[in-house]
Image (tube, rainbow, N blue to C red; front, top):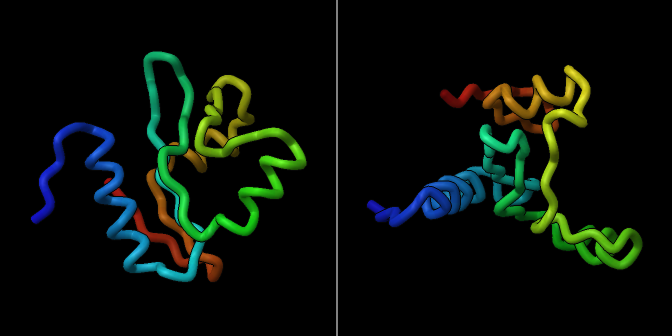
Length: 96
């Protein structure tokens, strides 16, 4: 069993396990900061070919972006807070 030293280690462990289950997909793990009301992506996989385009075209680094909950509409907020993993075929797995 892998040992986690802090909260971010836990997220990275989960991220690595999900990558093993979905090796060809785009996988992202985000952390919710309830106090400051934002979500921050801490790990992304399968996104490499788009990363340079986004960074060069828009000057954005997806690894350093935060997504304020108060700027999302209800549908976006509900999806991000649903604790669901969804693949492209619409199959959904619930995480508690």
